[in-house]
Image (cartoon, rainbow, N blue to C red; front, side, top):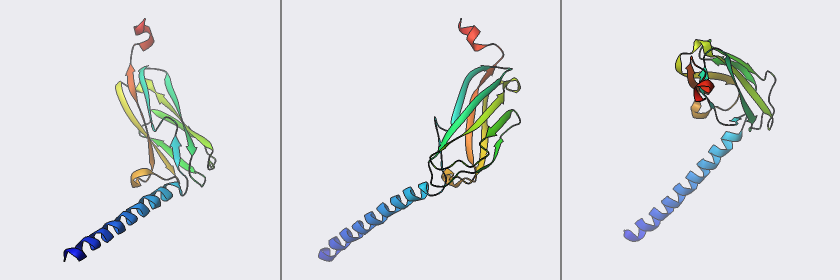
Length: 149
């Protein structure tokens, strides 16, 4: 019985290893099929400490690392305190695009965390329906630069 069990176990182990290797290759292939965002500096921006009043601007720049054009159909902030602008024309594979945000700091009080939702044809991790960008910071009444002096 042992003479049969050990070779069968080795054969089964070898087959499982081969299946797992194919699965990883298939997953890697799926990730490059179609359009895909790659944000320079990641998908989160920390404004740090900002003075309440002026509009705080940030431009998320990305590269389409997929093999088809990215078409952004809508960009929606989680609140009305953020203005958005983005590439309205398709971003071809290998090309760069942007999503520009303007946060109205006069509407912020203390620590803030906001989301911006991108509706597009691009691959979205974790099976989500839309890609999410994050902005955070701390809005204060006193200018943080004056406080340092």
